[in-house]
Every structure is written in structure tokens, then in C-alpha cells.
Length: 240
Image (cartoon, one colour):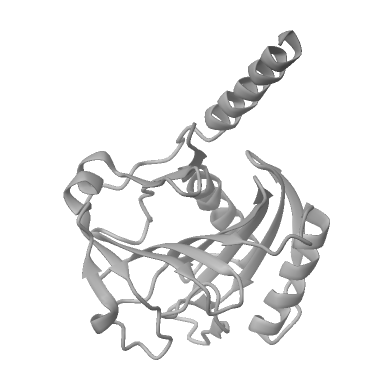
């Protein structure tokens, strides 16, 4: 009995630590214009017929938090620096990739492609550690990018993480799990940043598309993207 109590005590300490590490150090969303539940995420842009207004919209607009009871995770809604009015889209239990994906997306308009995403993926049982998961991520993202993206191992509030930064990456209706779109207009520069973590037996992807000032150089752009992402990925936290 004593051993079980000690285990429970340390488990609660670990959860409280994870929660504390994920406390928001970024501005919460200023205005949630709408919250949509998606029944599909068509990549051709014909998404309007797949959207239904969330019955929890008023609650989410007030609290600025989304709850996913079946997963044990919550999300505080992040203020994307390029957006005035945020449109949230939630797509749960998508099996189109052969795994179970749960999407939380932020757009600047109802039908606009997302520029911020958190994707929670239920993996097959053989993916039981971060090395296996990150190796699979590198392979998949290489296929999606059509190139060999550069990855960096970093530490964060959820332990080890894999970071990928892509200059001139653009959003799309199936961002961030579709083929990359890369822009070429020097007057309309963007940067994409993604971080991948393996926590509580699940892969979590955090991805952003950010606009850049014309005069900013590539290295400064990477620093800026990392700074914004440092706030964004803390929007995700354990429920206990």
C-alpha cells in the first residue's frame, strides 16, 4: 500500500511539472471569430461543405481553451502574430494516413488554409520510443517536402523534440500533413517551422507559417520563427 501511494505521489508531481512547464508565456488569442468541426479535410480547397459550427463555440470563445477528454490533453488558443480574427477548426479521428490523427487548426478566415496547427497522432504499438518516432518523421517529412529538410534535435517542455524550419513554406488546406508548398515571391516571404514531440505514447506536431518582412535575412527569420514557436507549443498541456 505504501509503495502504491509513493508511486501515485511521484506521478502527480510529474504531471504538475509538465503542467507548470506548459504555462503560457505568450498572448492568448484576442478574438475567436468562429469554431468549426470538420468532417474531412479535402486538399483541393472544397472545404465549406465539410464544416459544421461547433456546439461549444461560445464556451471556447470565452475560455480560449479546447478540451480533448479522450486524449487527456487541452489546448490554450494561441494568438498568431499575423492574424486579427482567429477561425478555429477541429478535425478528430482522421484515418486517411493510416493512423489516427486529431487536428487543431487556426486560420485567418473561415475557408482560408490554416497557418497554425497542432496534430495529435495515435501511433501503432511498434513506435514505442522517440528514436523510432523521429526517424519515421524525418522520412515522412522528406517525402512531403520533395527535398531533404534539415532537422535539429532540441529540448523543450515535453522532453526531446525534433525541429524543422523551411524558408518560403506556404500554407495549404491540408497543412501541415500534406505536400509542401514553397513560394518564390521575394516580396511576399514566409517561413514554416515545425516541432515534433513524442509524449504519453503519442506524436504531437506543432506547425506554423509566419510572414516575414522583406528586409529580414534568413538567419534572423529562423530566430524569429523559433521565438514564436517557443510560445505556440506551450499552448498544449496535460489534463489531469
